[in-house]
Length: 379
View 1: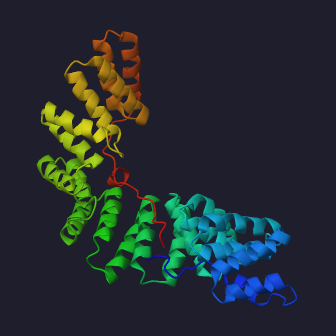
View 2: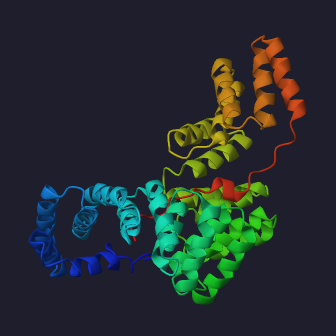
View 3: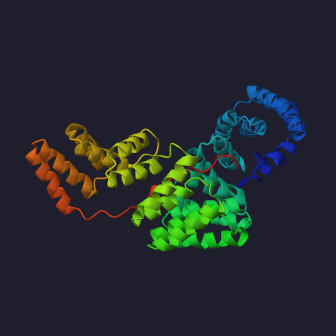
């Protein structure tokens, strides 16, 4: 696992507990129970301390630690926050707060305390690695790269972490970085389908379609049940006009994931190109009911409605497609044709004027089609 070495609780807090003055009986009792690993009893003891001294920053921090060590991260967070409010420079607490938030999947909220923790102890790789994962999980890919790279340098055999770095490079449009990480992954795992897919997306983005297709064929051969491998290859073949082979790949993806929105979309688009209107409508309408449906499905449904003279529905679909992507001239042109059929000449002329101002639409790169899954919050 990427973060398997991280445990809640900081050494600073453990040392502080060991050094509590014996003169303070409730505090010493709580610290003793904590050192002995009796976390539930220590939790109650720290609560006793706080009953008489609610603004004791160390007691609040230790109470948070007891919660965290029992897996109760929701209650640990406010205890850590109060400790930091009372004493912002308390060692280790920012890391513990960041980890507690991370464990709950609250990645955006974890970024600030983890940045503070990384600045506080620059020689400790843990806060930087957690910070990198939080930035990745919140899709701040460019910002995540240096922290993830530092983590890879600390643990160069951690393939899961290196894959995360490669994905960050890809989604930050740093394609050379992604390809460099791909080569590093291959030295450890020559049959990594995920690495082949990352390299394929990077090559496609750099304009190397044959290279991209070769990478996806390698990924498909290595692990044919990998999510999106058939879709990715199918989409690359589609952009090259190889529709029958692309259709086979989309169907292979649907055999693994019957509700794959993008595979349904482009399968429907191929049926539309073949004038199979009924089949096209079935695939596209089904795609539009799934999460992840894109502008192409909306546009294609409008085309089908216009072909069947359902002009009101077609107008609505084309306007929705334009809202999703105002720069697509095809949607404006098709809307203009429908408006003409409806007798709305002025509106049609306005859409045609827009078409003349827009450049010809190019196929979207594969990296824009593929899903970007959030980072796992399980270390």
